[in-house]
Image 1 (cartoon, rainbow, N blue to C red):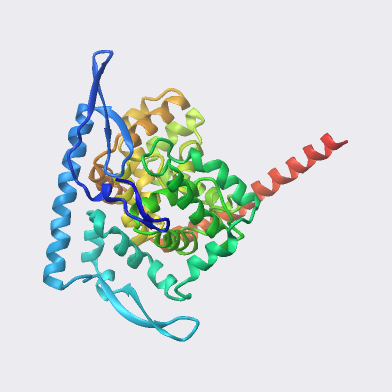
Image 2 (cartoon, one colour; image 1 turned 60 degrees about the horizontal axis):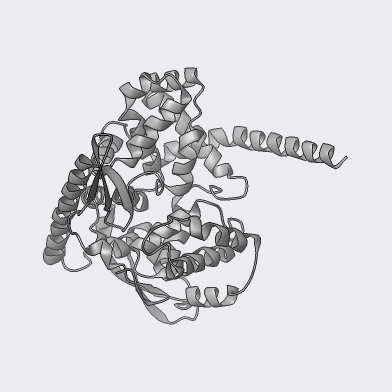
Length: 398
């Protein structure tokens, strides 16, 4: 079920098998708790209502699939793509798939917000994200050559990757196997050599793992990771000092105060720091926080519309539980409310409806201005922390 045709060609048929959940049920303190496997092979624990919701979601996925297939029938296969001839570095003509003009219309935007069918996600993501275009600018053998060139090399990044592999979604029926570890390692190590400024940062293992579950090959997962880090997300999110991540969290804090002022004021009075929950969101892109199909729906929009969707979703998680959060008396209560809410959002539409209909508009230009506003404070804080650490080290050495 989770086997590979070759070490580089991952065939994860489970994501296309839309069978209803067959949960195992046991009684715990008079509550019926069920364990079931979701669309991407993850074991999930919830109640019977959660199972019913997930089955409803699977039917919605089928229905959305019928919409996409109908468009393929009427507009032609790959209607959202435009074949284009480009040249690689050797000057030979190669065919690549770029965005069609239609991808810039509200029609496709709305369609993607409703969800991309799992079988179509690989080629749609490659197109709308720009990953296919990025791949077309290098020789066809780029990924294979890169993996062969770095094979056996040891760096701090490769050592950390090896340490994190068994901790990446442990228990998953494919990722937590020698084959899964090997595929994930090749993608992460390959990228660490492609971009030495980023190298490897904890959090990327979860992102790359989910990319492997969606894309058909390691190479496609690699290029999705590349376009994500180089074009979609803000710069320096995954560098050594995580400066970009710190900037994003400060911007998010400002947006929370503007969008949900009552929540922001109450959390501030409690001494709650958004980094307690948001760090994982910005580094792992909700891959550890939301159910897998909900994460994929967020990523559908992320690859088409950009990093602003992260803020929309993060704000929605607070907005959805506004009254409950206002009743919280301790920081720990806030964390538990947010974590519990995120983990049980099995219906992506519940989250995305709030994210796009109740948060308000947010433009890339506005976010860019807010980031520039926060950057000096972040860099000053990081510099102060570095000087403090150096001072402590000097005192210890003496």
